Image 1 (cartoon, rainbow, N blue to C red):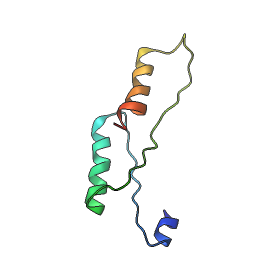
Image 2: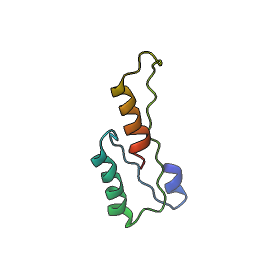
Image 3: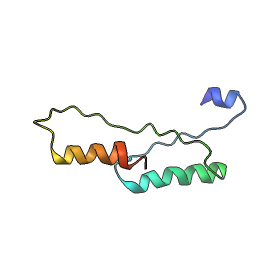
Image 4: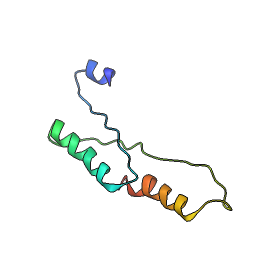
Length: 73
């Protein structure tokens, strides 16, 4: 973010546990509170836990979908 500020622009980095919906909503709330609107949102949230077809559980499958697919939505 130092480079962004050195160019005369502003940015905000927000960290959150995106396995649940409410923290995802708070990210947008933080940005709107700071800037008044969201012009660009970079979502870099993802998990890639190891596992094989045989040992992947339904809970592991659901966790990947919740973080990698549902939270960006």
